[in-house]
Image 1: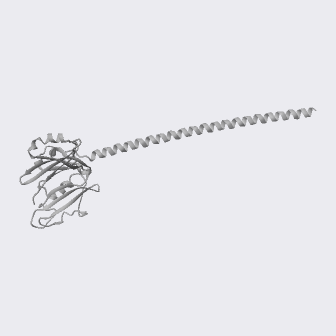
Image 2: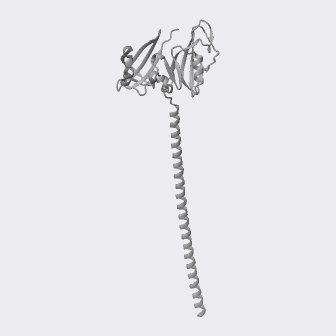
Image 3: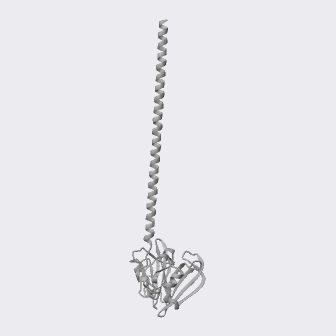
Length: 275
């Protein structure tokens, strides 16, 4: 009987110990699980923080790049030089980028190209899709057209003529520039004529132009017509022309306005040079 009691007590004790062991094990598992869960949450939070930091860094980098792009755009613009701003139309001057060109048959092709090459801007000169050769031959009383490229795009065109009765090379002083034709919207934004008029008409209206041209009223004519801006957009508008002469050379300065609000959408000067 005593043995039975002893065995019974031992069994009860063993069961109690097992139960305590199981509770301790469960508590350990719960604690371990809780620790893992908390560690997992910390990892998730850290990961989210890292992603947020990376996102903020990316946004900051994009903002810096956008600001840099804006600075590049601003640097590409050219202000009107004082010599052009103070010039009269009879001076027959125009400015492209930072280069001043005379339109009155006073500059040779070689002089214009050399001036452009020394301007600090990078231009490529082509004739018939091939690089311009200054030693090319130009027949008597014949012309040559040189295409000027900038950043791989057609920028403007130089028309020149050999005024002599002999065949000469392109770099001869007798091959004179008689016209500059703008070839791109970017060039138009960087081209100025006398009194600071920009090719695209930016910054001017019918009223402001009339005020600036009050000394040319006797040489002025106007008509209602369709006008086109440098982007090819057409509007009902007003064409204003100032017709002048420098010796026997006609000069025609044209201004284009939108009829709707009087905004100037174009300004250019043409000098007609006799052969």
